[in-house]
Image 1 (tube, rainbow, N blue to C red):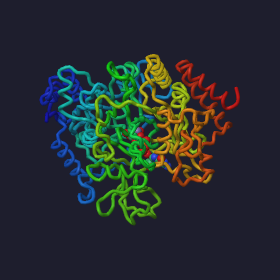
Image 2 (image 1 turned 30 degrees about the vertical axis):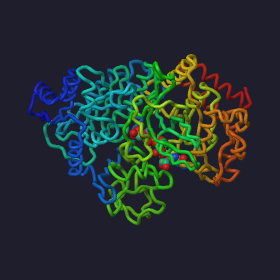
Image 3 (image 1 turned 120 degrees about the horizontal axis):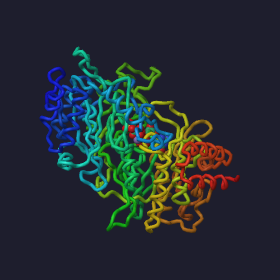
Image 4 (image 1 turned 60 degrees about the horizontal axis):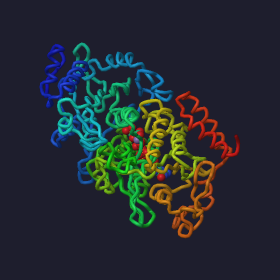
Length: 638
Ligand code: GTP
Ligand code: SPV
Ligand code: MN
């Protein structure tokens, strides 16, 4: 603990004090920590060693401060509830900035700020922002320690909630400093909740259980690979290893170095013949990644193991391998959506959440456990809601916030693969792109080739969810499910995918097969047409049958304008390539509707795609304009 109390020290003295306890010889890291301490003026500086003891001290302190409510240890051992400020409940996309040197490198879908101007603004916000608080220094690894696909970062933060969450979500502590050695590279990530406890004139300011600031900045400097986050303590705004590093900064690294950083789950499927496949899937926020990653197949004989639920880093295998794309999960925990998670929808998650969980913004039961919409069919008669108010089923509000979440270590998950943290990753056989679409998009369609697959990814649109501030339900383009997460020009991202595919193909390396899926199509009466969840195993089975080539020339596959569709209604035993619907109770007309391709609606969508593509000017890869033309031709015009 280094004492750097305000008023007690001049700037150089404060610097020296910040450095006094640094457990590393890494001079750049030490100098950076000193500079941030000088700017933010914390009362002291604590290096996070990753130990259980230090973590427990932080948890105890948060319980004392009212930030964490301990849950009933008999019902939910070693678990806590945090209630955030009601204005700090989700990612803030309109306050998320990509500060590349050139505006066109951020592209039309990111908020760009000129880096020098943004630095000046940030300095103003961060000046003295940690006064009276402890600044924690959190060295972390995204991916297994020392792995060939992994990357290191150091986050400073004045939020103990963030420190403890980072310890669940990433690998944190002294082992990372050992890897950094005296001069290793790391991504610097500065975080402050922006709520000092001492005013500019030295007057004390009151603390609250969830400090934050009305003004927020989630700023990224792609060229210098820095992250500055101010004003929020929530999720992707504050746990900087996650979206800020593992997607926005890592996507830039990946572009420069020939790999991929994607908003994707990764899972392993074993079929009844014991064949093993790996699938990566990109769905926008709150559109089903965690659920698919933890899927319990309803099809007999199939098993699914979880590797990751939110982010995948994929690289072509190096010398001595088959060269295929291999994926790791760079995280070490799940920050999952609570509402909708129940024993019938996601029993695996329910088991994962038995103990050792931090819940945020769910409801509290009278016996000290948690509840959220969808956990049980019938809500308890009385709850304390996510704002801390009395709640009954008559209240007319949700008891849990729609973006309430659980934070839990990956190894608590009963379906986690034994080798989920293998540094070399797993070879990817299939890639799925999905979204939340009440109409138009079929349950599943296969891309005819890689470029068509990239087109599918580039044209995803999805109804907006509560994972970010904004209008829930509004349809928007979310290419690759990366709209809020791509650290550079989105069209260049498509170009990067096309180039990587072409390069692998030219080396004779098999590419993953690409599919579009949609679990969320609705009937005219507004109900889901597809039961989803465990039944999605039927779609996985079809996808992997395609990958394995089981249906060659069997006629079970239909060549539609939007991609290859499974035959529906045929006997899958007699017709390989047909969708296996045995034992499923979905009316035939619903199945027809699930796969109906309405040419007029699709042509209207093509017009919107053309407008969307036009925003990217000459960054748009020609190949994607060609794919759009092909789609129009297949739909019957052009
Ligand atoms: P982020 O963590 O925000 O990236 O979300 P995610 O993509 O991991 O989504 P998640 O699996 O948490 O699901 C979000 C919501 O969609 C939850 O309320 C789920 O219950 C619901 N959901 C997931 N899969 C399905 C499905 O197959 N059908 C239906 N109807 N709902 C689903
Ligand atoms: C998402 O919004 O995609 C999430 C939650 O996974 S957050 O960590 O807040 O980004
Ligand atoms: Mn996500």
